[in-house]
Length: 187
Image (cartoon, rainbow, N blue to C red; front, side, top):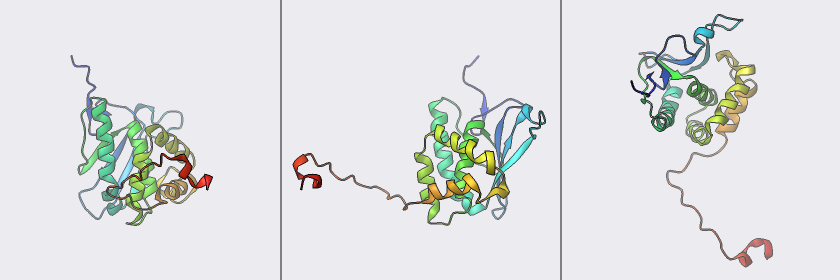
């Protein structure tokens, strides 16, 4: 028996009733992509719904963020020695923690324009997973549904991750000055 966990798509356990995220990608290129949090067995108990829509993205926005999310997730899945995934038409299952991270990216990008999307993707990729999980927890507490766009932490995510310039393809670092006497502080 293999100790490699059985997963589908993006690290989602191949078991019935687990807490995961679903990314619904319709065949029509003009229809929105929907990200749904599925609570699994925990759903329908103690007031927890079976599932909740977290984000609805226009297709151009999804197309702009899908590749960075796929690369980031697959790098992490490879490091964990888990089968990697790819986005496909229909239902894509995503591990619970990766789904939280995807929501942070989606919420930041949902109202962005074409110039802001690369900046958002770059800044999201620079965040550590734990930072993304914390941002998800803060955002979902008050503005975690699709209709909550531009409220509270959702708006803060957009402002924080879209502020900046498009990252340069290859930026050269400035050489470090070694001579402390030539620093402007001592002039």
